Length: 110
Image (cartoon, rainbow, N blue to C red):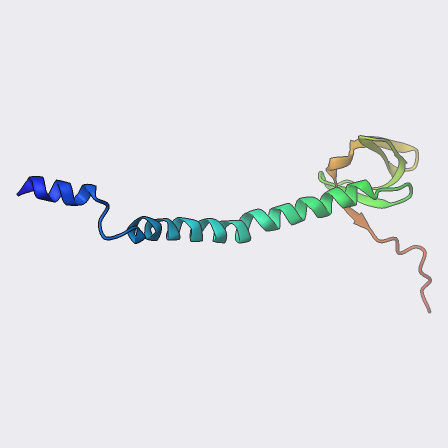
């Protein structure tokens, strides 16, 4: 009796659909994982890479450490940020988190 059951289990059940049906949930989980986690992270990294590549002198920035300043020089890997009068700090380009819009150029109506 047990010999027949083992032989039936070794045949793979009914047709080849059983094997594919077991892969469907795994594939579905990977697709959901990709769209919820991987793709948004890649998009965020691409936006940050573009932000870092477009840095230029006199941009007002915020570093990842929370320091506000104005860029006074740009190199390949670093930027020089002026955080006060005659106080300059070299920061790695990757540590620039935000480029602020310059509001001093717009005139206010009073």
